[in-house]
Amino acid sequence: MDIKQKIVEFDEVNSTNDELKQLALAGEPEGCVVVAKRQTAGRGRSGRYFYSPDSGIYMSILLRPKAVGFDATAATAAAAVAVAKAIGKQAEIKWVNDVLVDGKKVCGILAEAVFGTSAKPDFVIVGIGINCYTPAGGFPDEIKNIAGAVFEPGEGDSEQLRQAVLDQFFALYSSGKTKIAREYRERCVTLGKRIEVQRGEEIITGTAVAVGDDFKLLLRTDAGKVVWLCSGEIHT
Ligand code: BTN
Image 1: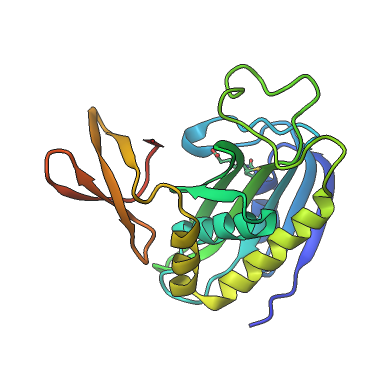
Image 2: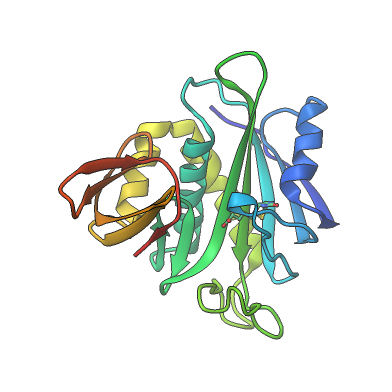
């Protein structure tokens, strides 16, 4: 399946996910990618703000999945693998959707599915934000201990990285969930680690033992239970 990429570039938008959603609602076909040099209201998971200065890549990819079960979670996993492969060996995936280099988060992913009347989404928007360089003046205080950059100053090529991510992403998307899950596990640094996860009021600790083909994380808790996690912030 060869998907035609159509790149729509902006200097500045509120959020590339929101910009692409308008195009999708107007009927834009699968493969459309909105790219911006910066975002004024970049969105992260759990309604958080995503800091999006000039030193990064901000893009959103439109999918209209035909395969049943190719949902926002699968799209998120495919994007994480695509970014990790495009960056190279030094990149690792922290379940569920962070890409790390040297233990620092260099990329965040926010996939959003829009449903009509069927159980399958009408479309999925996969938003990817990559810190190519450390911003002038450094990362803001709230994220300075967890955020990192892919390139050292004066090195690397953001446009090349962006295209490599897109090419990897569409190849993975065409290959299906089983292959994506295999490649995801190979790069998932969470596997085998002791983790802590907040579930409602409760904090559960245990060891991450597997990632399923549906990208759920299997946790063997210290209390001896087995729990499948489908989302949530984990701490390693
Ligand atoms: C996260 O780590 O919380 C997810 C961050 C996702 C950020 C990207 S940047 C491109 C796209 N547009 C947005 O508003 N958000 C996503």
